[in-house]
Image (tube, rainbow, N blue to C red):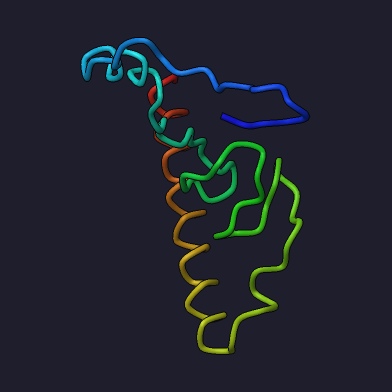
Length: 102
C-alpha cells in the first residue's frame, strides 16, 4: 500500500495462483525461430537474405566488399584458388544440363 496525501492506493493482486499448465500454455508461442537462409548467387554458400555474402563480398551479383583486399598474400592465393574451383563446378554443371537438353 502506498499513502499519498491521505489516500491509500493498493496494487492489484491476482486472486488465484496461475497453474503451471496455464503458464506453459501462455508461453507456448514464445520460442526462437531458426534463421532463414538463402544461397549466394556467386559462391552458392548459405547466407542471410538481403545481406552481403561474407565469403565472396557480393550482393545481387555485384561486388560490394573487396574480400581479397583484407587478406594476406597466402590467404589471398588460397581464396582465389577456392573461388576458381567453385566457378569450374558451376560451368561443368551448366554444360551437363545443356547436353541433357539436346
